[in-house]
Amino acid sequence: MFWSVTLDLLKGFGMTLELFALTLLFALPLGLIICFGTMNRLGFTVRGKRICPISSLCKVFVWIIRGTPLMLQLIVIYYGPGLIGIGLLPRLTAVLIAFAINYACYFSEIYRGGIESIPQGQYEAGQVLGMTKSQTFFHVVLLQVIKRIVPPMGNEIITLVKDTSLARVIAVYEIIWTAQSYAKMHGLIWPMFYTGAFYLIFSALLTFLFGRLEKKLSYFKA
Amino acid sequence: MAILQVENLHKSYGKNEVLRGISFSMEEGEVLSIIGSSGSGKTTTLRCLTQLEHADSGIITVAGKRVFDPVGGMKLTKEEQRFNQLQFGMVFQQFNLFPQYTVLENVTLASKLHAKERGDYKANKKQIISEIEERAYDLLSRVGLSEKTGSYPCQLSGGQQQRVAIARALAMQPKILCFDEPTSALDPELTGEVLKVISSLAEQHTTMIIVTHEMSFARDVSDRILFMEKGQIAGDGTPEYVFGEGATDRMKAFIGAVANG
Image 1 (cartoon, rainbow over the protein chains, first blue to last red):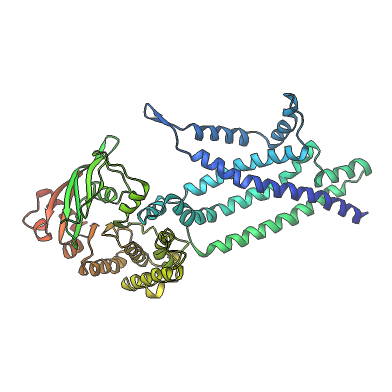
Image 2: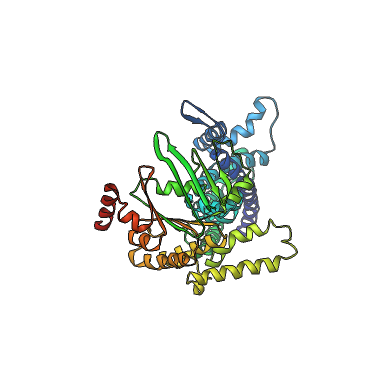
C-alpha cells in the first residue's frame, strides 16, 4: 500500500515539478519585460508633472495582479474566456498563464529593486570610460543586480513550489489532488500528510542551490 | 593653442543657478586646481566638462575642436558623444570601481570593449588583448599596485582603490584628467598615497583639473588655481598670486576657515 501510494504521489509530484519549471521559464523573462516597462521614462510633462503612460500602465497591472489572490486569477483565466464565448482554455495552459503572469509581477518588483539599488556612480564610471549604455548594463551592472536579487528570488521561487498546489482548483492533477483522491475514494488521510515530505525535500534542494549561488557570488561586495 | 577652452558655462537646477558663466582655458601639461566652498559649483563644473551633466549653455572646445555647444545648435551622434567623452578622464570621490572585477580587469574592461569594435579585432585578437593588458600592468605599476592586479576592490584600502581608479582613467589615454575631490572619502592617513600619485603625474606633465579641499596640496602641485564662489570664478592665477596678493577678502576668509577647520 505504502509503495503504491508513493508511486502515485510521485506521478502527481511530476506534474507539480512541470508546473514549477514551466512557470519559471515564462515568468523570469516576462518579469524583466514588466520591470523595464515600469521603469520606462517615455512620456510627456504636463504642468511640471511627468506622465509616463507605459510605466503607469505597468504599475496598474502589477497592482491588480499583486492585489488579488492567485486562486481568483486562476479561476478568472480558466472560466473567464467561456463567459465571453471564446471557450475554455486547456487546464494546464490556463494554470501556466495565471502562474506566469502572477510570478512575473512579483519578479518584476524584485528586479526593479535590484536595478535601482545599484549606485549611480557605476553608470557614470561606465559612461566616462566611453562604454555604451548596454555595455554598462551587461558588463558592469547586471552581475551586481543578480547578486542582490538572489536572496529575494530564492524566497519567491520556494513560494512557487507550494503555490503550484492551487492548480487543483481547476482539476490539474498535481500531488495534492492525488492525495485528495485517496481520501475521497479510500478514506485514507495519511497520503495527504505524506505529500509534505515531497515539498520539503524539493525545497531543501532549492535552498541548497540558492545557498551555493549566493556563496559563488560572495567573492565581491556590492 | 589651448588644450581646453570653456566659454560662459551656465547650469541651473530648477531655480537654483549653480553655474553663472564659467570661462577659462588651459594649456597642455598644465595642472589646474579648482577650490572653493561647498556649493560653489566646483564639482558641477567638472561634471559638465566630462558630460556627466548637461550644461544649459556655453561652449567647450578641446584641442581646437568644439565638443559642446547646445545653444549654437550643436547636435552630436551617440558615437561622437562617446568619442568626446573620452577626451576627459574622470576620477570620482567615491572611486566607483567595478566590484565584481579584479584590479586588472577594472583597468582593461573598457579598452577591451572598445577593441571589439575595431575592424581588425578578430584577426589580431591575441595581440590586441596582450597589448591592452601590458599597458594596464604598466599603469598599475606607476600607481604602485603591481602586487594587487588580481585583487578585488573589496580587498583594497580606500587609497589603493583610488589609485586603481586613477590607473583606470589613464588607460583611456584622455587628453585631460579630471579629479573630483579624490581624497575626500579617504581616511587622513590614506590621502597621502593618492596625492603622491597625482603629484607624480603632475611631474610628468599630465594635463589635469583637480577639484579639491586639500589647500596645501593644491598650492604645491598646481600651475594655476581657480577660486570659485557662488557659481562664478572669483580668483584665477598662480598659487602664489591667488593665495597671496590676489586674495580677496572672501578668499582669505575661505582659506582661513579651511586652515582652522
